[in-house]
Image (cartoon, rainbow, N blue to C red; front, side):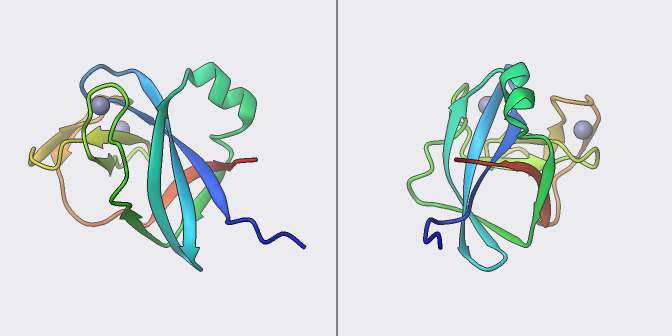
Length: 119
Ligand SMILES: [Zn+2]
Ligand SMILES: [Zn+2]
């Protein structure tokens, strides 16, 4: 029986530099995921780890200790209609997706993310 917290890594890209990074989410309550860490990571490494394989769903929150995007320091994130995630500085009202390059207004909340398991 494992008492370890349920932790997943979600891949994102920096909206400013277009470099990839991994975000660590911990399931604090069933269906509630807290983002508490981010680290620079190459996309080929993330594919090898299977971080793009599964999906987590529910509510999402930012931990007070979340250090922000490892490339530009942006403190939050946006999920594009294409399903990918990019960093967000919490001030811009529009978002240009670093994955598919479409631009849109920021609205709503994130309710699911592609994620893979952590060890
Ligand atoms: Zn960034
Ligand atoms: Zn997109």
